Length: 145
Image (cartoon, rainbow, N blue to C red):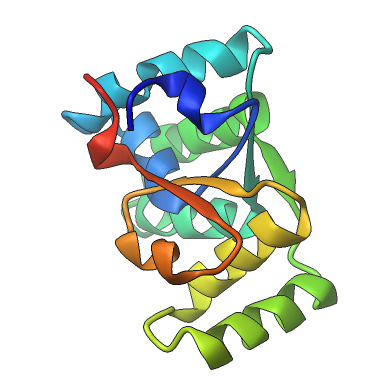
């Protein structure tokens, strides 16, 4: 991937992207900084599933880390639009799992959410998303930085 503009104006981010950003994971924090700047400036819309909220909160709740819970809540509220997991998404996820055998259920829900909401540009670090027809997949590891 050449530049951040390759992602387009609407990008679906999976759970790991949120974790990299909130927990400031090196080197991904630096690679993602231009995305979050573009989102904050209104140049890019970042979308994720409500599933991301659940997946990101497990570790901080398990560890009793209220500060990290608050950081995730703030991140998800300010920098992403949360899409609900509904029957339409679950049906699409089931169809994806039936055809892309390497896809796990949470990833199928993320992919289905991206497809059903028209966010066909997906930012992830999971190369399995590349097996899903109709999605343009960008790996965080391939971002400049």
